Length: 77
Image: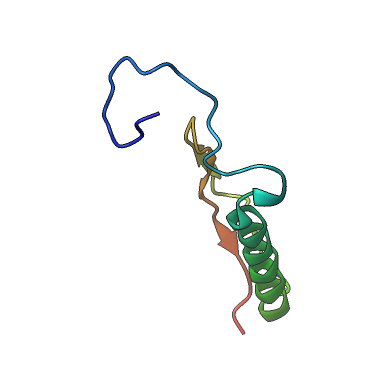
């Protein structure tokens, strides 16, 4: 009701910002495919890529938690 008005004490209702059922956000599937393809291409170009054993992987965030630093090593050339 009245979505354009700012109502400070509006009753809280469930959020469907990413959709549900057949109307689920396509960004979810798209981002997974981008990640999969990116890793396939990386491993094809640098098959010996691996985590740097001397460096720390950093993970941050409480709402959108994820890796912020992923040190890697591989052989040049």
